[in-house]
Length: 114
Image (cartoon, one colour):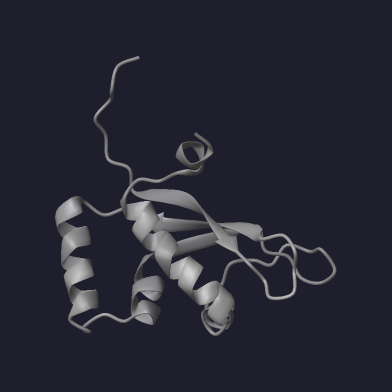
């Protein structure tokens, strides 16, 4: 199979969340804007310099979340309110933000299984 050079605008990555008190971790999928390497480096520099915090990073690049249900098992639709709620949970915030970095490195679910 040959490599086809094309623009990929976004990428979905698994996000493993260990809910306190649960024996097994949960996995959701976050869809992120996929940036060229030069832009990713600029964003990372902005983060290091304190010019772009985690909340702003997530607000600008998170395109969707899948695999979240309410206590009745109904799918919770993606919204900024949901994102704000998740970013307030310490056990979700860090894995979600770290998934941005995984996305920019091109780590998709299939790669994680190998």
